[in-house]
Amino acid sequence: MSEAAVKPMTLAEFLRWEDGTDTRYELLGGCPVAMAPPAIAHGILALRLGARIDAALRSRSPCFGQSEAGIARPDRNDTCYIADLAVTCTPPERGQQLLQDPLLIVEILSPGTALHDRQTKVSDYRRIPSVQEILLIDCASIFAEVLRREGDRWMTEIVRGPQATLLLASIGLTAAMSELYEGIDLPDQAAAEP
Image (cartoon, rainbow, N blue to C red):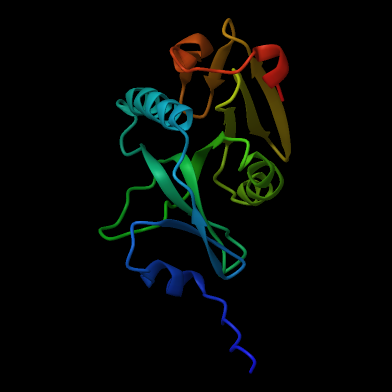
């Protein structure tokens, strides 16, 4: 006997959907995809970056940062990503689930997500007109890429090593990489660099 085909979800259906668990999902091409709990290093980086982003935005009302931010593709009704962190200056409406007009999107790369984040999410994030910067920061080595919109082009800045400084021009944030990674148990740096 054949099984019934699963009907793809629209974004609106996905935002109303509950599976009865605390599992986090992204919507990819109409299909909900479960997300595993992040590694400890991932959580530490998210917390440290989030605190610095929050401090940088204190004087920039109505701008705010959000962790686990819902980001929809502007050209599709069947895809919704959960960015590790994102910033917008568009005030939210009560009950809103998706971040509107993000200007900075942060993805913390892990060995299991790096390929998808780089090949799929970055391409889709670039399609969002309000996005000025995309930060990809590795949780297995002291390494980050800042993709910055400059007119019609995207430029990439590589930030590597404990002596390096991360600059997020979109929100006026400067952070020492050594402080972001302090106390995180990393593999041998020579072997771990992307």
